[in-house]
Length: 148
Image (cartoon, rainbow, N blue to C red; front, side, top):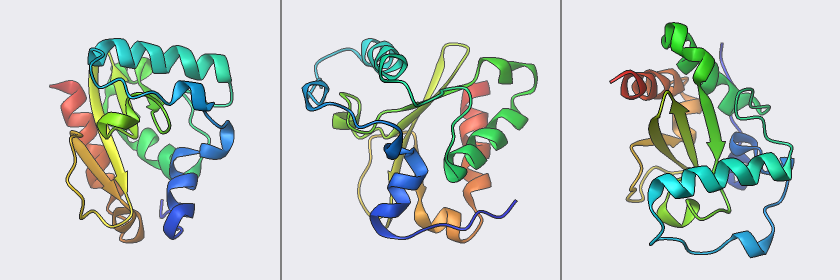
């Protein structure tokens, strides 16, 4: 499946589905000192409260393409796969735009247009990956890390 990517800010909006629900400003705290696991639980609860984002069935074309490819590589474990949208949350302050979670294993992902910025995330997913139909290689890396 070839996914046609969009440019600029529209790339990130489409990729992460920010149009689903705007994260209220009161949740945009810098929680760098909060343990990572607590941040993941908090983001998961926040998304279920805000609605609009389904961690087991993302709605936007680009992230859905990556999610479905990862799920296809996980075998039976795919039933436990979730993707959390971290944009605008405490985990975004750490440089994570989304997190794939499966059977207690997490893989952090940083989305970027250019790919030239330093990242704390496990995996970098860029606009170029989608334009060159290389996002499947990134999805393979995410699946590999989830199965490790």
